[in-house]
Image 1 (cartoon, rainbow, N blue to C red):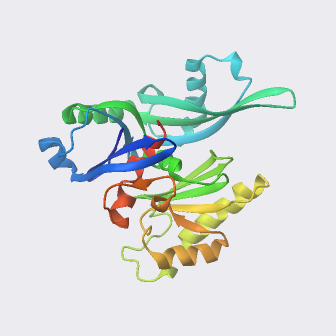
Image 2: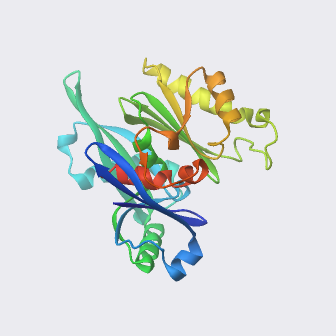
Length: 283
């Protein structure tokens, strides 16, 4: 199966197979977006799980009380209403989808934990147009960070993805996302050229405050923090962050969940990690 990540500047793809209980990276390709739209890929591909930049996507975690009272469309409407204050788009221009994380009783009341994704309909149609030009049939379209969670081999963990414009944190308990937080690099006072780790002290504090508040409030202990995006290949960054948080920090692309059949360097593996995570969510 193929995973395709439509990035802001390039498009990446990865072919992943499953043999018994193990996953293998078979082939991969990274190509300039304009070149891909003009010439296509060197690897033949018809169907794929698609991931798109988080800058184009909004995601939320919610609990719905007494979910049996509502139809799927009614739940989508509830999600949109709950999220409208965070969005700058008219409700009628939003496409809302959700996935059930777990259903459980509490004090005699049934609850449904859901992960919701909301995207502008025009933006979604634009990505569908790109896929038509690439002659790819989408099995699913999802956020790149959410699909990266499939690479995390822990139960209570956090994933930090540093994208081109944002820092996104997923806090997960029992392997499921319970809380998401995101902030722009501008708000974190990211320097244009990072020379010393002290230059991103606001990033370290943002991560620690997020974990202390959410994980601490759930009386849970985080096992590991996974890094994706920028700084993923900086051993110094990983070491200092691990000491600052006092928990293990690991690059998401070094996960034990994928075996390599192709020769690939760590930097490239990190770039195609969303493609791999996309496939693992389907196999």
